[in-house]
Amino acid sequence: MPVTIKDIAKAAGVSHTTVSRALRGHSAISAETTARIRKLAQEMGYTPSAVAQSLLAQRTRTIGLVITTTADPFTVQVVGGVEYVAQTAGYSVFLSSSHNDPDREIAVVETFHRRRVDAIIVTSSRLGSLYKSRLDKIQVPIVLINNQEEGEYLYSVAVDDVQGAQLGVQHLIELGHRRIGYVGLTNRPKSNRRRRQGYETAMKNAGLPLDPSLIFSPIPDHDIFERGHETLEQILQRNVTAVFCYNDLTAIGLSLACRDRGIAVPERLSIVGFDDIDAAMYVTPPLTTVHQPRFELGQLAMEMVLDLLNGQEVQDKTVACHLEVRGSTAPPAH
Image 1 (spheres, rainbow, N blue to C red):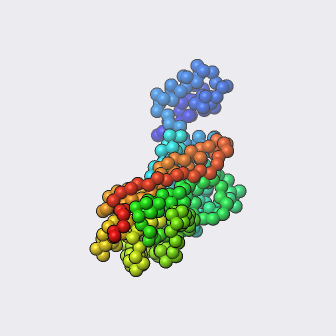
Image 2 (cartoon, rainbow, N blue to C red):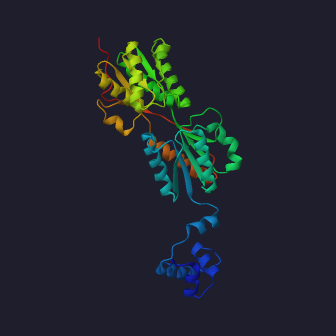
Image 3 (spheres, rainbow, N blue to C red):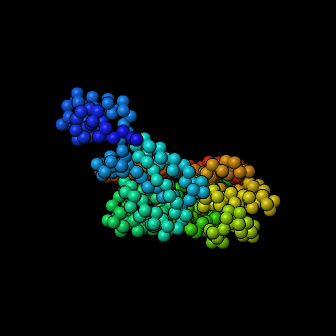
C-alpha cells in the first residue's frame, strides 16, 4: 500500500496536520521538525498525491491540447514544442483530435474544461470567433495556434501566411516564371485566403496580371493523390509553368500526379509547398517549400499559457517564415 501522511505522522509521533504543513514548508512548523519529517517521508518512500495537491492549489497542472488529427504531419512538431515547455514547467498535456470538425472541436474543449485543465491550446481552430463568447463559461485561458476562423478570439500564436506565400511566389518569379498558379485548400478558409493574398501581392509587385483561371481549388475531401491528379489536368490546360501550393501535402500530391503522367518536375512544372513537413525532404525531387516554425509555434503557445496562468498580460504573436529551396523548382523551359 502507498505510504500516506497518516503513516508518517504515526512514525514521527506528531499530528497529521503537522506532517502536512511540514511537507508544504509551512512557516508554523520549525525548521528542525520540517527537516525531520521530510527525511522520514523520504525514507518511507512517500509520494505526494497529485490530486490532493491540485485541490489545495486549485490547479491541476494539466493543459488540454486540441489538434486536427494525429495523421497531420504539421501537428507533430507543434505538439513537441508544447510538451517541451510544459514538461519543463511541471505540466502534463492531454491530447485530443478535432478531425477538422467544428462540433467535435468544441466538444473536446468542453470535455477538457470538465476535466479541470488549467488552460487549453487549440491548433488550426475552426471556432475562434466563438471562444470569446464562451469564456465566461469555460473560465480558463485558451490559446489558438493558426486560427482558421474570422472574428474576435482571445489569444493567438500564428505564422505570417501572407509573408510566407510571398516568399514562395517571389522565388518562382525570380526564376523567370510568369504563368504561376495558386493551388488552394478551401477547408482552411482563413489561412487559405491569406496565402492567396501573399500570392497575389507577389504577382502584383512583379507587374504580373492576376488571372482567375490560374487559381485552383481541388476538393478538400479527396486524398492527396486524387487532388493532385484533379489539379494537374487543369494546370496542363492553362499552360502553367509553376505553382505555389497551399501546403506540402497538396504539393506532394501534385508532384506524384506529375510522376504518374510523365510530367518532369521541375523541368516542365516547378512546384512550391508550404509547411516544410519532414516528407518534403524525401520526395523526388525534394520539395521547395516555405518553412513554418512548428516547434516554435508550440513553444510560444505554451509560454503564453504560462504567462496567463501567472497573471501576466500577453499579446498575440505572429511568427515569420523562411524559404527552403530544394529540387522541385527551376527556371522555365524555353
